[in-house]
Image 1 (cartoon, rainbow, N blue to C red):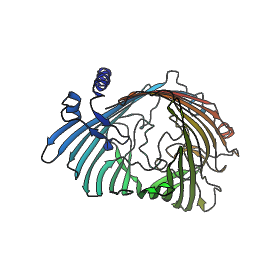
Image 2: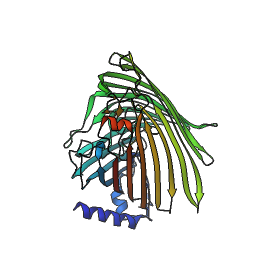
Image 3: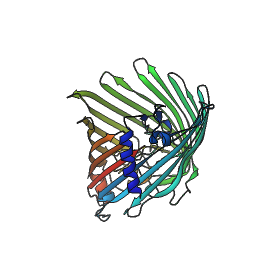
Image 4: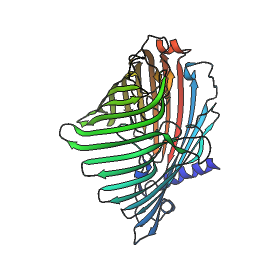
Length: 449
């Protein structure tokens, strides 16, 4: 039944594509819908319902479905983790958005994340049905108060993201005050992380993981274009770095400069962390550069770029400080959909190329080279958990990763992506595991409405 429903939506969406303007945003509560009031077709009626003309009250609906096939060869660098058939992950999101004038809104979103043929799925892959977002906004002029379960998304997603790559997006139970001016915006928030659990409607906020902060953004700055500055505090009842575990109270101060100058795109970010981990003082930092250049071939936009970053690791295990950088809540697929390693104790050099082959087909290729920043620290998973302890290996080389993908956009409602990743194991991986090279492939069909 679900299959036929999806086919119906695709055909239906194509039919109405030229008749209305629907701008779908990455954060669906920011969707922009502009429909000709004289066009009373079926899609219009289910997308936007007028509840009160006098109060300007409208009820909006929308959703998306992502079906993804994945295959690993030598998952976790071990040929024993063998799955010859691969597996399917499916994520469905559906929202309802009640808006009354410009002063009040109530937004709710359901999420269903399911797996088929996945061996031992985790809660990010198998979370059948849950309330992903439920919040209300009260707005007065340039200020908005938002209270409830919500997605948080800031800057380049290096520290706070919606975790788009994995099968379940992440949310927070939060209170947030937002200011939006012409060139200045600022958010102050206090939140608890919502932990995914197996089962239905049982995702609860984690009292052991608290996040609060202030994030500001200034646009139109002379020479620099855009500047972001932030202060973040995370408190966890227990964290683990390499071989040490303990209570963590960590502060992060940072800044990001980004913009476009003619055909040159630049994105530079740095952050410093301090606080307490168990009885140790925290002194960690990161610096990243993401530069690219746009050029035209046959009236198609092409991009060649270079990224690099240094993310600190712990230098001496038994002293009174820890230098391991905590990436907080980053996008899950930080170095590609395969999501093999995370952004802690890492040096990364990353050239890439993006090609617009036709109006609907894009091609991407990138090459990552990874080293440990400190040979006395572990490497970590994208969620911050320890992947491999430092053990007795003195090698810093983690490995090299080649990734490529084709993206075909049928229209704004339907998109298909085919991608692959090859990870060539370095000396450290070979020292601490079976060290097999990893091959990963995936195909993704996304329907949005």
